[in-house]
Image 1 (tube, rainbow, N blue to C red):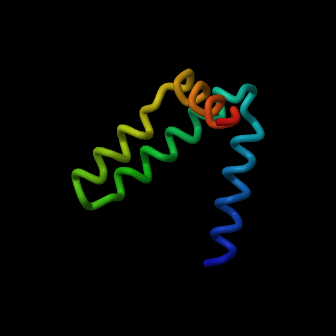
Image 2: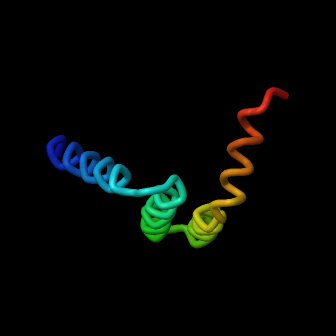
Length: 71
């Protein structure tokens, strides 16, 4: 089981490394997150998860930048 986790982690790192821009990496992350959302048995929880996964890159970037600024 640990070998499988290591392989999956290595594959994910490899996919992200192959991306040419931060936006490409975000798209890969979004796709993975949506797949994880589909595994949730509770419909309301799945809906919240999918909504969070659909955050556009521009908004994600703006929120990330805002979080870095001192309060």
